[in-house]
Image (tube, rainbow, N blue to C red; front, side, top):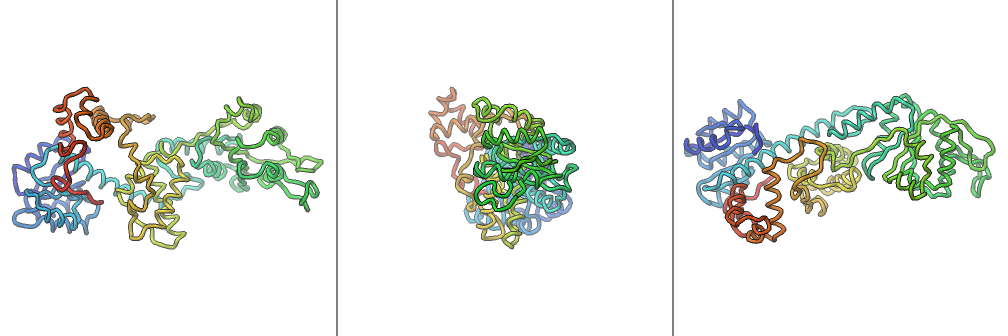
Length: 474
């Protein structure tokens, strides 16, 4: 259970209230009360993270309070507890808005795990709402959406580089937003009143790329019925962005190098050079140093382009920026489709956070467009997600992740828990085999699983939810 949480315990039994306060009160604030009226008063006076509610409180029906909280405080999760395995109570509780249901007796580990998940869910839902509010009030010109450490560092770098005329090389995986970074450099710099011109060198046939960049004169080639200025001339006084510069053919690399040295361009078929004043920004997802070693990219051109190198982080290193970007795209596509923006439930948000996004921001943008189009009600559902995201569980299975952020490193106890559970999954659920692989006896393994709330039940799986804890709702 997260430290610093505020837990409201509504239970008529003073011994049970005292036991929970002893179990959880060291690192959290526990508010015990014996009846529903006292609970309602505390809820009016103080913000709580989760409510642990007995099904019968002083002759009153605790399910009624579930329904009230669902309507009045939808972000506060309620875990209902009953002394019997009465399935009717469980069904009524979930229909009334309970986040989960526990039947006595249950181990302490199960209680803390259920409360931990409830609090995590509550905080994630609150965060999604706050992110949506921030997305709607963003006003930073030339801003890239993101508040993670890597994005704050990138934003500061763009601010500094935008003020100087130096050539910039943007590097990073495909889909990380290199053109947005180039536009930010333009918008924040002294050339912001001039034109911003962009071209993807890989998207234009080699035979046409020279004419696109440098222009041509009438009669320079077949179909050249008139003169046409190139992109360098069109970007005069502003910024020219050459994306995927690593795909530029070698012949054009020589002409580009001369243009950078002389600050002049010669149109195709022309006999004189035209001065140009542009700030050049280039980008690539390729390893240009390797291309130089392979003889596919000129080393002297690389030195000209790589005056200031700016690396864009992949989305998997940007943490909760995934949710900020998701809310931005939800708003964007809702406007385009002329519909109300659907809500992003906590369970869907968690799946988006867990996924590793190999296609980066571009993949997320396409995914959110799908979600907005497919969402039938007021909220996005798990079923609207592509199967690859629904099935992705790598983060849960990861024991130790490589990271530059010390705050994201795991405690030793969590590393042990994840490793043991991963070995159990790899052993096909066989506790005997898992214990052998771990080098411990089965009793030790059972004690660990019980401590983590993994009831012994069938080998390799927690106890059935209808015996101990119902399927949580979101």
